[in-house]
Image 1: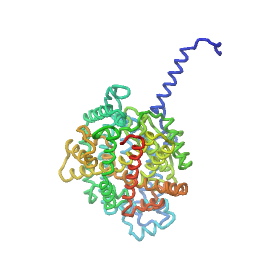
Image 2: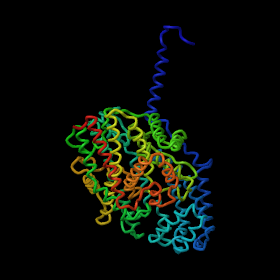
Image 3: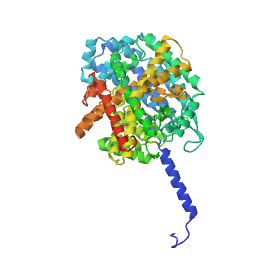
Image 4: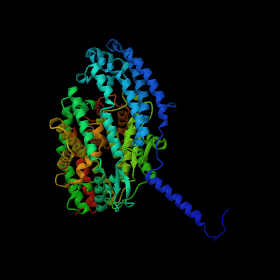
Length: 623
């Protein structure tokens, strides 16, 4: 019933409505209701059903043992299709169990499920070791004749890539032993590391928003972007304190993984710690060394920026906890609704088709966003299998950086989505190409936002953020690669590393990057110990620099060509991993064989720095 005019307000109803609105706002700021739906991965069955089916397919494939070298193209295609069926079954089961574990790695039931599935999958894989060995033994002329047949187009690049490992394979018996023991080897140590880091809790300082409380590592790290230096310093100290309790355990884990890698490399005759990663990335040792050397030669760029940033912040010199400090004049939290709308609009400005895919991720429950106790830190895109769709994991804190992380991971997701028709053997790209779509997505988002801004301070803040993304992705990742190289070399040439050894290598490689423009504090020496890439994927991080410089070059071509560029870019994404990195890059007009390619990409970063400096002066932030 409508109250009469001038009737007193129903204060209880108003209070209830205001409380509901506040709850809704809080839920949006934390993305509390943004959770993925994983059950579709199981196709109405269970993981046990999928694994039982996988066992039957494995036995079918195993019946081909001893015949691979005698197969014609049609016979090999039939076998590869069955192997594809097997990978789909294992991929669905593994993705379901693995993503549930990522939601809460401290849950014993989920951990046990992951262990059981890994052991079962390893047992099946052991039965199929023969295939790679027999295929590698096929003479080159015979192999090329087979791969020229259209019947094998769906897996030709995959089969060619497999043959590149011929010099690093061992006997069938040896390969079976290594496969059987892998689940209790490196994979087990990586899982322990994930459990250790997921359990890290940061005692947030009184100066932090929300006051003194216990928070996740992600929340603690997010405060390094806070505009108040006291908050950043307190947060950095709190993170350093949180890393201390399990430091010796994480150091032991890394030592063990370093040793395991050295043994594997020795047994397989890889010339360096990075060679196996380069082979997987379809890159030569020499080309990767050239990339790293080119980046190190331009360490003057981040040093110049950090000197300028110190002036902007009114400091004589930055400390390590100042590097990510926001230069914006306000520190506004961004809710999930606003962020998703911004990213959709940004992708739409480039391609309505891509914006439609982004909407599928957001509306289809393909994203798990909120921070939770026990959740895996960071963000990632899980491709799952080519017959399904990808998923994204985030740890949403409402920062501006989170908006770009969303755009970044959606780039990965779009890449996986478009490449699904390539099938199980050609959907994935090497790591060197995997970052192209993600970094491109960030660039699209940044430039769409920049076009909407007139205020000089807001433009400076965004240009500074764009530059810092490039610095973090190119220069910091190369410094991290050099840290990895120092650790692997130390373990092989000297022996086990102490906590101090790890800290020294971390500080040395960071100081090499930063020069005297940034103070490396004592607490920061242990921040290597939460980085998962070092443990799970040795040698991964240089691929970020590769991908960033390639993506910047690709985006520069888009800026030069406009809409005419879009179809070739979409074609490159849809090609997935069906071609070599050189051929994929050529699809968008980039020549990875050009010795000057990396220098040209670094010149684009230098241009970002010039633009940020000019914007700072226009905003009156530099004299």
